[in-house]
Image: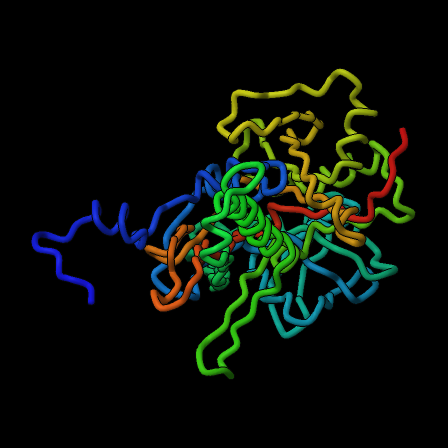
Length: 388
């Protein structure tokens, strides 16, 4: 029978004797093979980490009013027809600019149709011989007119889930007591499992498809990764061989939306083949920046006319068949590491029942990925080779 201990219970006892106190080891895990988990490292340290008070975390997003209108009718007269629902984009008094520069004044708005005055300026009416597009150039109101009609876009809730990640180290007490070549086997297995734990989170952040399963005795959730959220700027290199012109085309789309006007920069997490392509194109023009707080990760910067790419090689991508051709371009300010409050990465020792003759240590993380404004990110896939 265990005799009682007299006095105040504190961490000196629970940590040193029982070994049951939890240790926060997240940063220590990140230090192990950082090239295998650059997304996890960057979201925690650059995108920022934030606690969640619920297993489902949500955020609001909004966009500006559309500034173009799809014309589906033909001819040079009035009314003009537009794509269904797009008439809500314009107001009475708006000026539409046709492909030839013609100014068109909107006077009446109906479902899928606009009554207009053509050629308000000196340019002749454009003949919509085929369906086309006009630019919405704001109001041209008369003096003394009332205020312009207010239109706005609806804010939308987006969400993701935290996922429970666990990895354990289990040894019999005989194995734990045995001397091993190469040092303490328990510590060695703990080190290996730390890397695998980090790798599992990284792969979920890259490829996860979010879900919530409530059919079992308790809820089971999976966090969505980059390929789950990024849907707009996805470029597939047909034939597999990328050229610098292909990259330039990708950058034009990628840098369309970014948080800063001056010197926009995106994080480019790329597979080894893509990094070789950068080296081939730029020769010695790639600058290696070792001053970033990235746990020793090497960053190369590639400067395009549209913005800078901070390049990080992702060795883990080379381990797969399909995903080995993928690279991910991220706006660092629009990705974030989310973790359940109080349940970020912990390492707990001796979790086994005291009646069994073994030791069980466990890494535990309850976390998810928040990907905001997906149009600020991009995916470049299908790259298996490169050329000039």
